[in-house]
Length: 495
Image 1: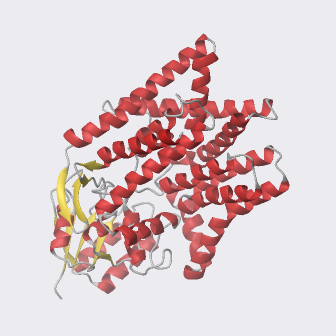
Image 2 (image 1 turned 90 degrees about the horizontal axis):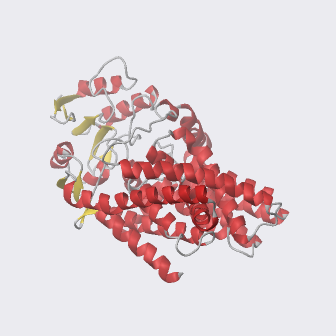
Image 3 (image 1 turned 90 degrees about the vertical axis):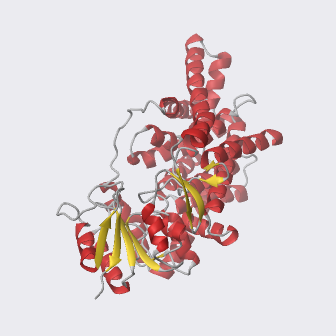
């Protein structure tokens, strides 16, 4: 088993290195948009700022402080960051294998980690807050799945599961609710249930207490709870998008198939657990993982139904799906064997496409641009002349603005954001926040900045957008030059 886990870790790291690096140079996939903003925020924390007090964010604090710790230890470079993402993916693959080994035989316990790494982790957002949340959730489930069950182990498992909410609140809440419901229905001893509840509540309570002390309880409540409920759904309504692209068809077909199969397997596992009490050890673990995974699906379903989103929302259910596939192949009727064979073939095709296929695409065919910035050399999906221009007209740590959303670009250029808003998104941020950002820029008067509203529309002033006045206000103080790619360079006007 130990050798097998080292195999999972090594294979995961190799595949991810070939996908996240071209040659020995990291790939930075965020030429536009707000993804990558946590790298900027981590640099702000290293400079002494406190999240929620000194800058706005509605995501839990875990991801920013984790990145800050990484930069403190390894240095704020793109190579260190991307290397850490390779390690993180390998750790996740091993944790999926640990859970799968509790419910599957030798030949089948390799399928879930392979599917997770290639169909969930590799094609999703680099450095996203959901990855450490899933590390905590998987580690907590692994602890809770061990036997014999003791009160200290239950408390530790609860702490790990609860810590996932410090990174991603809805994911952590869903997983925790599923685990607590399952343990309660299992009629656990009151000490075990109390230890689980106490452990699950502790990480979030400590984080809330600390940031309430630093930023004020009302600020934390607004940023963590009220803003996501009131503003985030404006641009993130639940929707259905199942139209695949030809190039990614094998991967997306596998993602949808495994997601649907995972939900069905989880429901079947819970039914089996209820009918076979006292349940066998593997049945009990399958029930625990199923309850946690379905809780995560219920909590994150509002994010939309599309292949990549479905794969992420149902990824905790991969071990129980493999368990039912193994059963279908071994002793199921002809229909079950045929269905298991079809799902397995689709999964293997998707894994090959998401590993060897994506690695070959990234290494040989993906049209990227090699650029050199202060945080290191990188491959970008498109040229970023606006970032090169900023570096040519600023010194390191010089204040500037990159608006409305240029996630990760302050980190790359090692410039300092003069606003308390690491990004502004049309239709999501409030008008009051836009006014505050404009006032901060007018007070600081940085020499240069960038306005680049890609990939969202309206990079020119107009009455339709609530942030239109922000651009109009900048034009009063800055001369603007539009680049061919749509980015707008801004120079402070002479008084």
